[in-house]
Image (tube, rainbow, N blue to C red; front, side, top):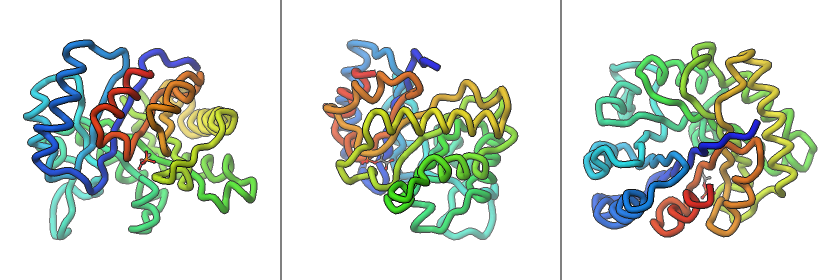
Length: 250
Ligand code: PEP
């Protein structure tokens, strides 16, 4: 399905200080205000910056999101941040199940699904990440792995809500490597089938973002693919010129 309004979301990971609000974010904002983009844009900074970024954007054309949340709403979870806390800070979206969290923190599909439920309960738009490792791709298992992650990580409550899937091959994240356009199209089609298998008609409309070494040089071709509804951008979202170029390519 061709998605006309694409969604471009930046994942700052553990990068970003207050100075970046006066720098990169101010530059992005000025540019998008001067010439409105045809794509929706979002930035997910570290939790420490969410509230200040929301204030800096001040209702402008960039949504702000978190990079994770806990399932629980509050309690004795040192270091944890709940979905409600993200909303309280001004976030409207949250990345869940990023491969770095699946790998570093052992997050399972079932946990990701519970986090999706918590995010929906709090009123956040979940961006649910899936993707195969290099070994899985080389074994010819990419589509099957992505299908399994989708069946396990989605949540019944997604139907009728604003949410997105992000296909991020683990081997393409932060490496400068990307799948071929045919490979992206093939997995996005398989992902759509799995979304429908899991949610019925509720799986038909959510955008499927591509993530993994998207940059100003490759964004236009990737975003032109019918089943690519946008991009989840790591490294390139830290530089205003690069992130703007990707937004403008959509
Ligand atoms: C990511 O971490 O979600 C990501 C896509 O990173 P990068 O664009 O740097 O590969």
